[in-house]
Structures are given as C-alpha cells and as structure tokens.
Amino acid sequence: MWVGTSTDIDDMKKHELQKDDFIKMANHELKTPVTTIKGYVQMLLKSHKSSDDVGLVSALSTVDKQVTKLTKLIGDLLDVTKIETGSLPLNKEIFMLDDLVSETSVHIQTAFPTHKVHILRNDSCKVNADKERINQVLVNLFTNAIKYSPFTNEVTVLVKNEINHAHVTIKDTGIGIVAEDHHKIFDRFYRVAGKDEKTFPGFGIGLFIVKEIMQRHNGKIWVTSEKGKGSAFTFMLALDK
Amino acid sequence: MHKEKIDVLVLDDDPDLCMLMETMLKFAGLNVKRITNPTHLHDLLKELKPDVLLMDMLLSGVDGRDICTHLKSEGATNEMKIMMISAHPDAREKCLVAGADDFLGKPFDMDIFLGKIHNLLTVKV
Image (cartoon, rainbow over all chains, first blue to last red; front, side):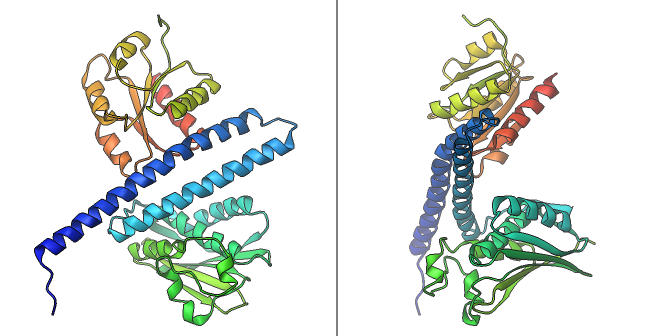
C-alpha cells in the first residue's frame, strides 16, 4: 500500500497551480497578437467594402475567418484546462433553445456554404442554461458534422420537446464511427485511429468539452452511428419549469 | 500643447494594438488620442478631458485595475467612463470589481468594440 506524504501532495498541488498559471498566460500571450491581426483585417474589410477588387475582399474575408478559427482553438485549449481544474464557470439564463438553434444554423450555413443545413423539427423549448456554452455545443456538433462528411452536402437538426427535456439531434451522412469508439470519442484528446480518420485536422478536444458542458448542466450527450453511414449526435437538456 | 477636449483616450502598452484602437475609433468619427504608458496619464486627463478612457488591464509594470480604482475615487475623474480590455481569461470580473464601467475581451470584433464605446459616450451625454 502506498501512502502519499504531505510533501508529495503539496508538490502535486504546486505543479497543478503552475500548470494552470502557465495555461492562462499562454492563452493571454496567444490572444494578444491575434487581436491586432483581427482588428486590422476587419478595418480593411470595412474600408474596402465597396471595392471592385473582388480578390482583395475575398482574401481579407479568408484571413478574418481563419483568425476566428484560431481564436476558437485557443479558447478550446483554455476550456480543457478549466475543466481539469474544475473551474468551468456557467452563467445561466432562461432562453428559448429553438431560437438559439435557428440562429446558430444560420451562422453555420453562412460559415460553411458547402453544406446545406436543414432544420427538420424545431419544437418550442424553454431552458435555463448558459446560452454561450450551449451555443458552443451546437457549433462544435455542427462543425464536426460538416467536417466528417466531406463527400456529402447535407446536415440536419431536430429539436424535440420531450415534456421534461429538450432533445437536440445533429445528423450527418458522412464517414460514421465504429461502435467501439462511440464512448471513447468523448475522451480528452482522443482521436479515432482509422487511416481515413487521421487525415482530418483537430486536437481531439471538441467532444470532450461538449460532454463536460452537458454534464455541468446535468444533461447528457450520446451518439448513434455506423461506419460509412453517418452519425447522429443527441444532447438532452432539462426544460425550465 | 493639446487644448481640445477629446472623446476617447486609449492606453495600451502594445503600440500596434494601441494604434489599431485609435484608428478604429477615428474611423468611427471620434476625436481620439493614444498613449502606451501611464506615466503622464493624470496630466493628460486634466488637459484632454476625455469622456471615455479605454485602458488595457496589464500595462507592463502597472496594473490597470489600480489606475481604474484610483480614478474612480477622485472627484476630478470619477465621472469619466472607463472601459478596460484584456486577453486574460479571468479579467472581466476583476476589472468590473475595480470600478470599470465596461469590459471587452481580446480578441474583439470591431463592431462590438465600437458599439461599447458608443454606449459609454451616449450614457455620458
């Protein structure tokens, strides 16, 4: 039987605090130059709004989009640390989940014109949750659905009012996931090992963050999928009484 | 010698970002000056009388929150609106506790940035 001494535990705590401080400063240092890049690109986009130079406007829009993506990646890394230290805060408010799904679908459609986003069902659902975090869940699931269906061009979403809970399902007809990975994909840094799967970019933290956000809301998330036949991710959130 | 009253004074120790924010605000038609360190801040505030001070939280040796708390406690400056900005993940709450009227996280969207400044100027009016 091993018993940890107080020195060992103190060292571990100190190491955890150092790691936490490093991640926060790294987050700050990475975001600072990104702020200047994003700002100047948006300034240029505004001042060239009516420009005939389609190439220039397109290039600037691309840079703006990539900077937004970079900001999200930095934010996700910070979220992973917050989750590990148990300090992912929630700012709950009452809002209509169906409205949020509609807004997010429009945003996703604009950001990813290669795929058609269909809302197949959107029941009225009042919830008490962190709106920004639930939006993060939706964006993650939509982004994955589109990313992992490069050869098809449709993603669907359903919002069902199941009396006490809202069920939101985002479905694609992409590469699918084998059964043995259905639980593992929600683990931190887990990436499916297949030859095709490894060709896709990503840290493997999106679904880990999504799962944590749902757990913090006393909700659930699961996947139904078959390799080669697409995936349906469903999350469940309690309705506000 | 600056004699004209200005709308916004920008204080950020990152010179590129400081210039960017000044440029954005001038693009929106505002009268703006910028500084990258707080050494002569009090004199400038007396001279320029900005309606809004836009200030970074971490200022290379000086904590913007201390400046904010001090300005909000002085009769000559406590009505001036202060918006603080930072990329630090825990900054929002800390800056509002220090007395800031608003906070903006970095990186920020230009429209949101200008909207917040407009709100502070409108409230002042």
